Image 1 (cartoon, one colour):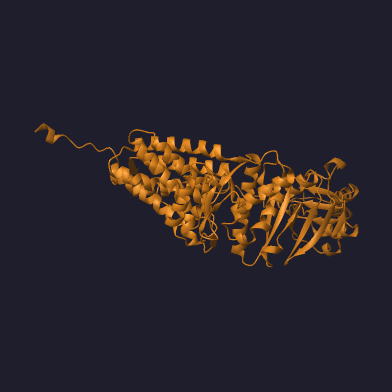
Image 2 (tube, helix red, strand yellow):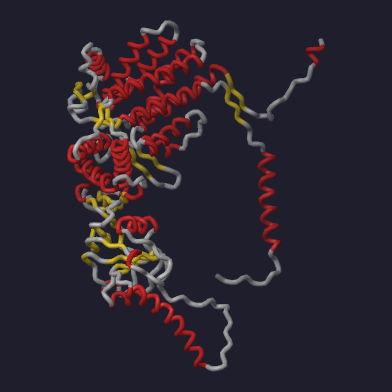
Length: 562
């Protein structure tokens, strides 16, 4: 009787949504599989693109897994994990974002029947971690190094890696053209770690083939005043002065008060303003610089002054472009025009202003330190150029990674099939349930070649059977065989130059396994309700706060106009 009368213990706020146990885990797995299905069709050279329309009315056409995941605005807490791994793959390696989401989704899909049959998730997690460790060891074993090759050989090897990345993008039709451009750009910046040293400028119009690479810096002509057209537009071996100051007449503050006893004194005040600016301009000219760039405005007086003395000037140059000019020409950005010595001036072989489409570009080429490059992209539609920029970003990242970690593996699903075969073989040596789990992990890895076939419209079962047979050969000669996209058969990916840096695969398998294990380890979801009263209080306090701020400064007279 006493048990019936015990009061009920209320732990969580009313309206809190808790779900736990097996159904909750299965629902999380389903959510992750749904996300993987969204990007599934974008994998590989024959992948389709997604058109995403956001609430601001912007449309994005993209094939890049990370871009799609960012724009999807996913609210499901478990599915957000897949968005995070796509972002981490993008920032770490640059390519393989679709792969990583697909693998994570597939690992969970293979785990689902076991979960439904009552297997404890920790057993699955243990086996998956073990399988991923074995898979990564195998990739390192199979990877081929490109170290110690001559520069020419290295260039062609890196271009092949870039072409593999670009083949799945919108600009895949011109992949050789862009691959060489990307490799040249990356080799130009050398060991420089800052990615923004490779600038990408977009100019609508023309064809993709009209895109070009500048070994130096190029930026759009900035806003200019009268007198600009009288300035020379081409210099050979000029000195370059970089400033972070305004070169224009500054009007004094209106509420300054000056008492004069003689009207002639007023003229001297006006003259002082002019003398200050003329003094600044004179110092710029005396420094010997032929090109003057400033982050702030260069006024009409200064523009005309420089034009009369055959000096080119550009004001309001963006911070990023100014920094790149500084890095390329060896100059230093100055915050004053006093005491300008030769050491702070930059130099380059050739400066010219060139017409590109409707835009005019200022181009600095043949820079001494040469640690920067600019790719000028051309193309029809704006969305197309945006997507081309994203594709080139992926290719640039891949080439940088291949330079740093100089090992590559066969692409086209070859490495996935080989690891899958190795894990199946290894699973047979294990007694116990773990054998089944590692087998399911191996089966999940086959999703990459299968999806490549599906996206290209081939019979996936047929191609996978051929691949399994080839990879099972005892001699091991079938290891580099992957899907041949053009014919719908199988081919040696190494011989066909379908390569990718080993680090891409290692990172993808690591991240996908981690994400799958993370989702599997969650056994309860608690969703706190947004209490209405709390929202009301927050709104009231915000209003009250505003009122107090307003009252604090009342009655102090008018503030100074800025």
